[in-house]
Length: 142
Ligand SMILES: [Zn+2]
Image (cartoon, rainbow, N blue to C red):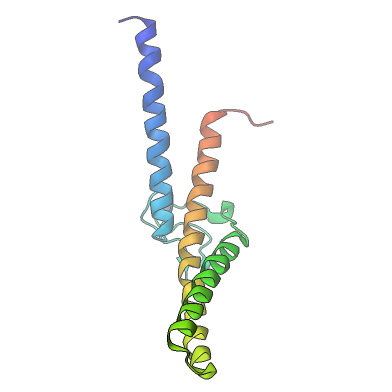
C-alpha cells in the first residue's frame, strides 16, 4: 500500500461517477425531470421550460437547446412519414384525399412526440456538460 495504489484507485472512481451522472442526467431529461435531482419537473405545459426546478431550485436558465431538437425531430419525423406514405402508396394506391387525412396528423405526432423527448435529452446533456466543466477546472474563474 503506497502512494501508487492511491493513484490507481482514484481514476476508476472518477470515471464511474462521471458516467453515472451522465446517464442520470440523460435519463431524467428524457423523462422530463430535473437533471440534477430527478424529482422536479422540467416542463410547464408541453414544451415550455420552467424557470427553475421546484424540487431542488436548479435554475434552468442554462438550458437553451435552441432549434437543435426541432431540427432533429423534423428530420426524423419527416423521414418516417415520407417512408410510410411511399409504402402505402405502392401497396394500396389510395386516393389523394386519404393521403392527406392520414399523413397530416401523423406528421404532427411524429415530430411533436419526439420533440419533447429530444429537448429533455439535450437539456440533460447540457446540464451534465456544464457540471462536468465545473468539476474539471475548479476555481478557474477570471
Ligand atoms: Zn431539481
